[in-house]
Length: 440
Image (cartoon, rainbow, N blue to C red; front, side, top):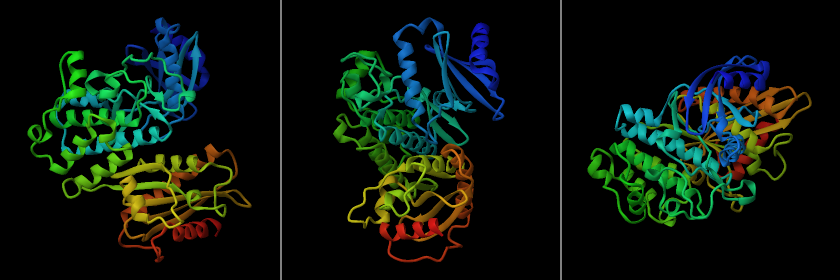
């Protein structure tokens, strides 16, 4: 371990001070380090030396490539990556908290409200990954971290790309990867072609365990794989009688044996849980973050920054707000330029929609936002934030938190202040409002 620390310190250079070992797994060790430039603690995950020449190294590098492209509030990001003497490593935030497995080892069953929150957080992360053609394949309590009232998804080490050329698969046809207790029937059968609906099944297995204190099936690996394919688990109604039937019905659907029986997307699972829990658990605000570029035909499309980068940075900043869920980086199909806002809200399980835009001005860059009520189209807040020209990443790192704080203040006073705009609740009307805000 001391040798690893010395070699890591040499590879990372003066920016990082490598400290103690904080995690030990079958494939990698995790070390605590200080980022002296940004004055923050980070974690450095290093592949074990004895695995550096094996397929595990390729999987580890694939994990780096996949995770690096998934910037979302409910996914642990990657700050930097490299190799030391053939051992790949990456730097990520140091997340203070506990894994869901540690929580379940201490408290066998969680409250319905907490289960719904954790399930929704992980589902949002999965929806984001799936829309980027990445399937996780190992959703289990060990890969969910609980910190600051939020669940974040870890470990894309055996993830695969639905779009094969993007990321090779490091398993042979018929080979099973993942954790048996949470495998979908198609994954347990070793099917080569699986999609995001497999992760939905696995997440439903995790939710089942959080509610009942046990996975849907337990036993020998062969028995569990067979039961996933052919048997129905004990009903949640019998194991958790206090749970409202609508929530049980949603989870039962997510546990469908065939992918076609489940929700089509993880976003649909979030929306279904939100509807089912209405009136049964304390409400939380959910904001869908969209880009004004999705509504524009050139007049106010982002220049100098992609719409995806803007929505992701804003969503990440919003995730720090208390009692707020975020559906990040949403895209919306425009049907004859008249798509009702309530439909967008239902699609993403959101009661607020935040439109964002960034544009260059004579003196710098301006990030604009407008918060809309999803049900009635009522404008709740709008604002713009200016910065100097520069790299897209640094601009958004500066301006996105300012916008998020303003949205947080607007949510606190929601219902008492309005910005005075009324009108048809169609996207083409909102487009004009956002463009006016940006060009003002």
